[in-house]
Length: 498
Image 1 (cartoon, helix red, strand yellow):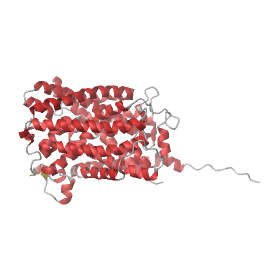
Image 2 (image 1 turned 60 degrees about the vertical axis):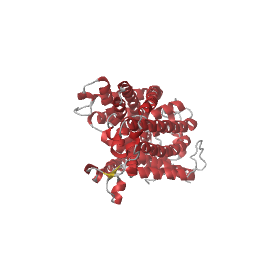
Image 3 (image 1 turned 60 degrees about the horizontal axis):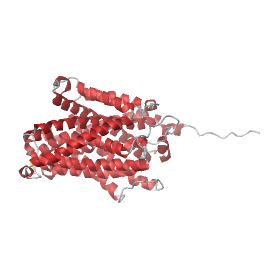
Image 4 (image 1 turned 120 degrees about the vertical axis):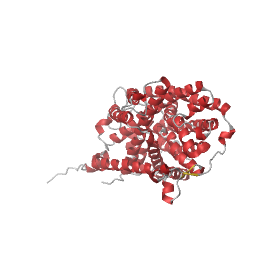
């Protein structure tokens, strides 16, 4: 047996059939391009636009955070092109995990699947705590049960995870309807923020657009400094173009999750057309909104005075528009709700794909006969997310979500030219332009952003990967479907004996 064995494309496509390719009920195809774009925007526009704008403008990039969002958006768009080709060619649950299994081998697929579970689980838990805090502020709820500080169990975070998990389990179509409604609310208010905020922008707040480089504070050295600075022995610093790049690596968290659209390939009515539309539409709309909102925020308030926890709402309060701040808080609650929902749906689809392949026990991949969703693994993972959201302050782990997404994007970008070489006959309704140049540029750009994350983030990421290796070699390597096929003796033809 080999850790580099690959899964045949015909098997991947067969599993996307109505019977799951093995006689068991498959996922039901109920989504269109508009639903997919709604899911994508629902998960992308959330924590990043409501919190990271202020944190990175104040600590790393100043007004140059606008450039940081643009850089991160371009890198994400490059990766989205690669996702679009693979998703339209191999429309299946599991997205990057399945693409890696078909192109680069089982061990790479496991790494990326384990990595994506981390990204979506932590993403849902972090955002659930943020949702609880915004709700407490909006409705004046007790911080003991809904706040980030001073609470043993964040009841609000646990409650929203459990409620949204029920929505996700009952049906993907119902999830899409809830998501689309929430997306309309927050996109409308984001547009309002840009239009209304332009009246309060001051040119003086945008000068200098990229503040001069400054030495980092004592607490930002050591394992907290970017890997690039540690490798080359550079003096830890903030602001300047180095600060803009560091901020780009962090605000990339704001774009993570768009790959959730690719996880819905088996539930899309016309995946070869609608998946590329959903992926690229999500990134284009989200990037424009991010750049517009971040420009307005740094233009309304000097970057040194931006509120880290609620930058947009506090910016309107500082110019005497408290009513607008209330609208922003409502948008934050709606926006974060949709992020949690799509995180939970995407996480369950990745777990479903891994379980169906036998890398974790296949019994938990059962699809509900009426709802058409993987209800067992959804319920199991929801419990884990609820515990994380309720007990642990996870806001400091946004970097870990970013590195997980960037790692996935590197492998997806590499998979495009590999699959073109190994399966030139495969139908590709959408093709990445200028391949293999664009996929290579995408992979290198993602790697560069990864190395602009802190040493501390890399250490945490490697620890999670080590745990995943123990599970793979302890169970998945021997128990998965391909391994069982290899160990099954070929039938012998009976011969007569005279």
